[in-house]
Length: 177
Image (tube, rainbow, N blue to C red):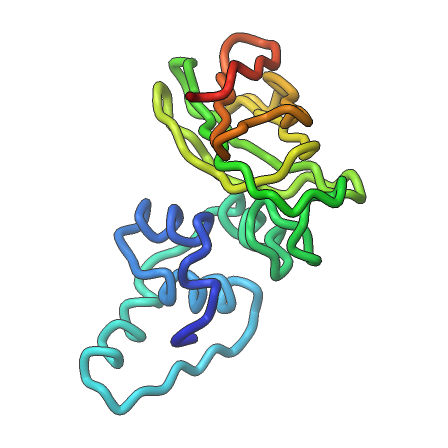
């Protein structure tokens, strides 16, 4: 797993933080949860201990699904590395959760599939690299869609954009100066 882009994937890193584990431990546990016989090997005693500790926790069904939906792509980026409108200019978009409960943010890919991006805690923010024309939805803990957010064509002359998640509607606010 050493050097794998999965180790820096924000979804996997977030799950690792929640369990107080490393991203590699999360990946090993995910494989085990799928019934794969994961056999991590190392001659380094520290790595051996990390590998053993990978079996000392369980992922939730939701976390397993979040990892599964990554399907080998980084959040917010299509397989060709561009937005699905063909834009190659990446926009750093801050998603601000103004609610008093957690939300899950999904990117809707060119095939209309929801791709999990991140869980955002109450009154917290995250930053996602995305592209003009990309569409996101925020989903509440109850599974209801809170809002739909489209990164507008005129987004971010300086490469930054902000989306506020509040109540049961979608709202994209002005770009940061």
